[in-house]
Length: 422
Ligand code: GKR
Ligand code: MG
Image (cartoon, rainbow, N blue to C red; front, side, top):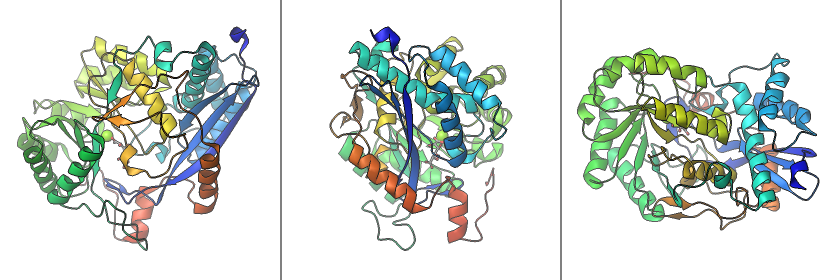
């Protein structure tokens, strides 16, 4: 009976959820982060869930793809990927956009296909009564470790009351932020978002973290804010301290120059973001760790393909995140659980959000890890009231595209986007 499951209807709902004033190399997070929630309905009582970016161009492409997927078999993921490619090739508006945050250009087809693939896997799992991790080859770990994701931040968005994290603009405050995050979630790895303060200060912050947490693996990610020379200098000071250094400098060539001058592994979610970047990255020795992300690598199966390629070329595999909600966390957890060579703690922006669209209970952090949901499919249920509330918030908030730089420039008209900055 399930062999005949077909896509009967697709609903795409943009939502906005409150986001603190987190700083990065290109500006500051706006007061709301945007996501799109995808519901794929078989018309037979089963609905599959996906979550993705919600910038306007992406929403337009999602809607065009959704129309073309009606009637397709939820098991026909290859045919679906080809259909999305077909739809987008006839859409002149397809191109890069800032929607993924600090990701340069990844394949629009893979980005658009991803939430539909996840929703179809949710459906397949629900139909079979098995968790998504089983459909990906089976979980090799019962729970998935995530890392504490520290940000320099302001106490509040201009004109708003301070949030309960307060400001973090120096090493002491960064350590205090780490203490709170670790005490609340139990994280066993730490990532600091850099590219915000002068490099020497960020080095001091990492050294302060090392003193405070001698046994916790540390990462620093300035999102390509540094020249090759600055990157090499920072790497020299942090040798033996960092587990990996993420995107110190722009482009494969710059990363390769840095890699030749430091023993610290270099990681990326900026210069290897699509399959065609892998061969030149391997050839040049630009990176030792690739950050996967099913939202732009084309879903869960294609992320597993990426994991095989990394394995073959002896590159490490970690996982990238953007501000996200529970459907994404569930998908990330199933994927990481079923990917043996994903040996680093995954990134997550989870602690920074205060609003959600899935029913509470399925996703909890214990000792910094999320237990793989055991229910059928993704194992999470949509909270329809919350979805309606966050959609209303989207309609009212006026934000339609992520623009960290534009927001920063409205606050500080002298702010310039520079890559590299130092
Ligand atoms: O949320 O500001 C942020 C991050 O900087 C995000 O946009 C990046 O894409 O977390 C990401 C990263 O690892 O580069
Ligand atoms: Mg990064």
